Length: 118
Image 1 (cartoon, rainbow, N blue to C red):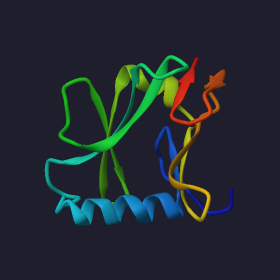
Image 2: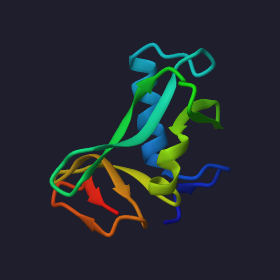
Image 3: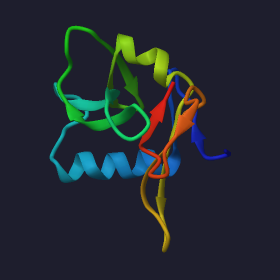
Image 4: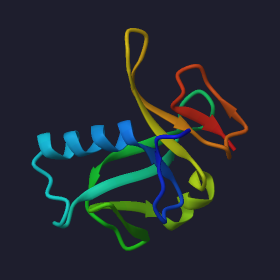
């Protein structure tokens, strides 16, 4: 995809996804340079086995911390194996509105797109 932002991270954001994430942080009054940042991860559940985590959080001891164009990004070390190479996109059109997870490690995904198996 031509609008993927290329930064030294195990995952990538499209320009539209990064713009939406910055808007969300601004709406939540989250300063990019304080102790909060974007958490990306997985948890058990969903119809395919795992669901994605995407939210504002503080760093934890078992996190890898990345600076993504001024935004702190936290990923638990154990989750990187499942997320490596993933692209996060943002769609906002008549049919879809939300983040899309394009994960090359997912062997199977469900219809909602937020649940996968590895």
